[in-house]
Length: 71
Figure 1: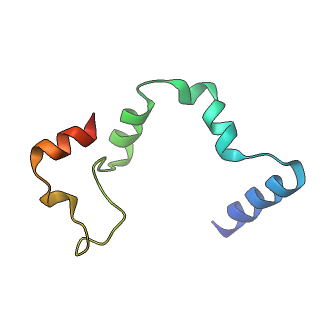
Figure 2: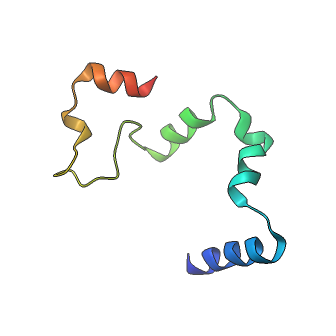
């Protein structure tokens, strides 16, 4: 992982390229079903949080609130 980060930083510094921008404009990422496919593939909980569960637990949210986040 460290090698990948260093490579990204080197490309960014030497070539002025931004990986995020290139991904954002890549044809494959324009697919409207891409996000749902990635969520299904990786098992990501789309209403999840990066906070520790003792700080903010999305599993305790009311079902209606979770539905709003999924739309």
